[in-house]
Length: 391
Image (cartoon, rainbow, N blue to C red; front, side, top):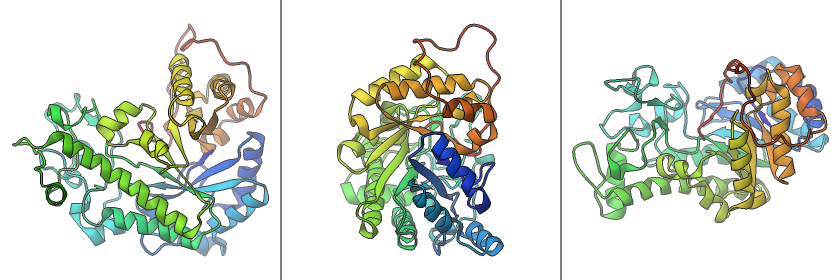
């Protein structure tokens, strides 16, 4: 179950809520907690590399290290705790320490040479803004830019060194930015994609002897796409090595796009290979959908395909705050497949008692293949503070 740092419960800022979290975890049959400790360049743990203001404020108010307290309490109850880290997204934080130290070149530049730092409202400047938009508007770090990956690996290493009791690290936003409609790689020269900073293109040329494409010229598109994909993969590998240097038995996992082909082509997130090659102990696909037929189809494909039991299904339980029985039915689909499940998120479940009750009850029989039942559509659910619905 995912536990947000800036959701409605803010358990790392309100340690008195830890017993409720643990009680809910037991009621829901949860074995592992993904506790968000790093978001937007800010740290809810003792850090010298990130903005640890949230952690410092909590310690000053509570006279206790909230993350250390949660770890001890969860372990006493037989629960495992993974530090959930938003890796390459800084949300809206233009003042993050990593930008102060590495400068503007750490941030993504699009094919036209525009830095995200210059985007109005962090949305893509485009003649017709109805035709293209950021899937998750934010300041995004470029893993191909000098120093970025090294700094992020060092941040995770610091986290593990200071909290070696952690059972693992859970990566989120471990990809390039997504744009709607998405670009199927650079070779078609359509849409908007990222990674075109001058220092990044120079690094590509130095490492490969090839020329990176840009707005006004062609380049070695296939090699460029593969190189960018490799920057993300190398970052995953580096984080895993840093984590296991402190605790060899800790597990590395990642929240990944529910649609692996799109992830591979446009997000440069080759998560199937991460599982195949053992870079990840398991991947959690964010299969957040109100289409029950699609949910069943994709969940079945994951569990019978590459990785098998090492693919967990992420269920967007907040989507069903007004239809809790449907969240329980999707859970039953996953359990019927013999797969592991992760619930997004404790905050939304805690805020909706009927949803909590439905998910905590004995799972119903899986629903028949069908999307939304006849009748008026359910109203849109309230937005979560940090759902990365596109992987």
